[in-house]
Length: 377
Image 1 (tube, helix red, strand yellow):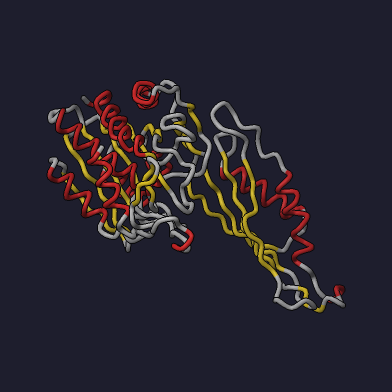
Image 2: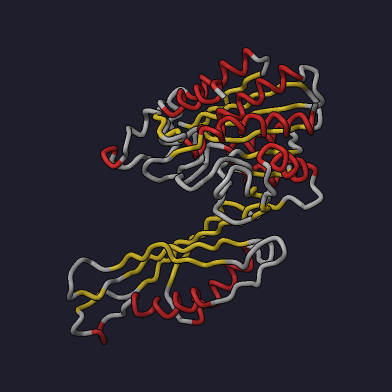
């Protein structure tokens, strides 16, 4: 417990706001090198990525995490300073305590324990850590590393993502997949004019509103056994000059689809643009696919092992879910890997007074080391 607690505190003290790793990567690499890991630093732009491996050949088990954090917001809103780890009532507080510096610390300690107990383990075990998970683009983190792996032929059989997956108790929910994410920036063109003379202008707000309403009311699919139905949400709308008597010349709307395997990006794009054309809009649209859906099958070896470990260590039957947002697992799954996410309770992530339970800190390394032992021991 003390090892993972101390390492988590060391990581929390470092203000690793995306994409600055604030020395976290070097700290982790130094520890793993002592344990016999080969550490490769993959630096792309301002982003630090660590690929630490032990053993050789197949099968390949990877533990995946990130050490970058979101901003704390006003520090005066926190009960204790966000970058000074503080213990209160059995909880460790600090930015990144749950998302996901405790998870990374637990994986590091678990890997040290595993290779100490199994120096001649089967295949390869690895840790992949990035400083570019919380940012909006994710261009130079695991996305870029996955491209590097394709170029070098790096195989991955199983990937354990340490994101905070649990709801109320450690191990009560594991992620066995994630929905895909497809975003769009829609620009609707109009004609600027005086509000008193609408016949001499064309209001893009009036033109876009019925189309956006129909998009929001559309049933895109019914989902399937693995994923819920596709959801559509408008996140931002901007228009107007700031003057009350001017019809604006354009409108910009941002919206997003979260989708499973019942729809494809191509069908969602096609149906959207068909609807926009039906409403006669003069528009331009830019699409961004940030991740495809992925799913670990019920018969998957990693999924079976994680469920068994949660039963044994946490005394709980985990719910297997594909809900929530996205994770860096979306970049690893297309390499052919089975991906499962298991981590601490996510109730306080990105919030003021983010925290993790001390008893969960104690059990997390046991979970990860047991997973490695079952697969490679």
